[in-house]
Image (cartoon, rainbow, N blue to C red):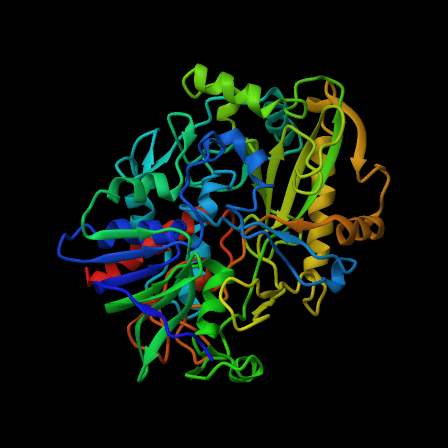
Length: 536
C-alpha cells in the first residue's frame, strides 16, 4: 500500500516535472506572467559545481553520479551482448549541464518529416521562429539565426591544432568547408558553434532558469523525486514527490507538464497508470489509461570511435583539469578550459543516403576517448566519433519496478532493423572516418592506430569492430511520440491522449531523430510548447 503523501500548499497553476533543457525553458516562459504560479521539480541538485560551468570540465563530470542518472541499457544482442552506458543529466539544466555544448538543429526536412508523420504544425517554417527566438548568436541575426534570445551561441575561444587538422583533412577528403552547420546547408566540415557565454557553459539553467529564479511566482525544488502524477476521473490533478524521504503532494490548477526526457517521462507516465496495460499490471499498477505507445519508438544515435596515437604532444590527454581550471579562471574564461573538447566535426552524405540530407555526423576530439573518456590511455592521441543520423532500429523503455527513482529497463534495440541497414551504415561511418584520418593534414601528427588496431580491415572486420566497440552518443528520443494516430502518446499540441490537463514537453515527443545533436531541438520544442500552453 502506498503511503499517504503529506499535503503541500499552495496550489500552483502549472507543475513542471524535470528542470532539464525543456523544463527550464517552460519555467521561464510560463512565469513571465506574474499572475501565473509555477512549480518546477528537479530530482537532482543545483548546478553549483564549477566543472559544470567550465566547458572543458565535462571530462570530469562523467564520473559524478550525483549529477548523472548513470543509466545502462539492457544487454544488446547485436552489440556482442554489451550493456551500454547512457549518461543523462540529473541537475538543474539536465543534460545541457553535462553535454558537449554543440549547437546543432538538424535540417529543414527533418521537421517537414515530423509534420508528414502526423505532427502537424511542426514543419520547418513553423519551428524556425522558435529556434530564432531562443538564440543569441554572437555572429548576429539573419533569416536563420536570432541574436536576442536567452541561449548564447558563439564560436569557440580556444581551438586545438588537431581540431584544425581535422577540418583540413575533411576538405582534402573531398568534403566542403562549412562555417555554419545551421546555415543554408548542413553538409561539410568545420568547427562547431557552442552554447557558451563569455567562455562559460550556457546551459538551459543558465540561459532560462537563472533570470527567472527571483520571480515570486516561480518555486524551484531540487532533490525532488517524482513518484507519480495524480489523475482523477481522467484529468491530471497534481504530483506526488519525495524530498529526503518525505512525501509531498502538490495540486495543479491548470496543467501538469512532464519534462523528464526520453527515459524518465515514459517511466513516470507508466508509474502514474498511463501506458501499456499488460506492463502496468505486471508491476501492480492500476491502469488508468491503456496507452501502448508509451515507452515505444525509442531511437538513439549509435556512434563508432576511431582512435589514433599522436606523435606530437598537442592533445588534451595529459592536461590536468585542476591546472586547466586555474588558468581558465585566472585568464577570464579563456584558454583550453573554454574548450568543449568536441571542437570540430561535420556532416556528410554517404553513398547509401536515401535522400539529399547528410546521414553521418562527425565529432572530432583532440584526445583519446576510451569508454566515454572514463579510462585514460597513456600518451597523446585523437578520436573521431561517427554516428548514423537516421537509424531504422527502434527500442522501448520498460518499467523495472513500481518505484520512482529506480532505473527503468532500457532496450534501445540497436542494429535490430530487419534489413540490416543500420549495421551497413555504421560500417560506412567507420570507413569514412578512416578515409578522413588518412589525409595529409594528419601526417605530422599520426601515430599508430588504436581502435581499430589495424588499418587493413575489410567490411566484415569493420562490422565486427562496430559490434565490439559502438556506443551511444547520448541522443535518445521518441518514447512519447507526438502524432495524430492512435499509437501516438501526445497530440501535436503535446497533450497526452486520453488524459486531460497533462502534457509532455521534451525530446521524448520527437517522432524521429533530427539530423544532429538534440539539445537545440529540445529547447525549440519547449519554446513552442510555452505558446501552445498559454494559447499564444
